[in-house]
Amino acid sequence: MSELRAMYQQAFDAFVKGDYEVSVAAYQRVIERDPRFGLAYQGLAEVYSRLNRLDDAIATKPSSTPACRASCSARAASPRPRRRRRSPRA
Image 1 (cartoon, rainbow, N blue to C red):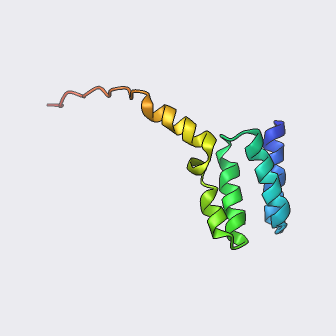
Image 2: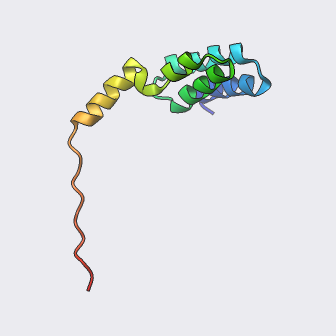
């Protein structure tokens, strides 16, 4: 198991035990290490919602982070491949 995956597992384990503050810190460490680790954002948002920190949960959405905005902008700017049209079957 990679180090990042192990860090994620620690965050998740703390969440399952109800140790939400430890879980928040652990999820944040995972996100700092790899801003593209989507499950960490999902877990962090869930912990925030359990703590009734709904504004933080909403702000945790990956598209609200600078790294994701840059990645999403680059993806949106790249041309999409065209789909081939299938000929109608007789």
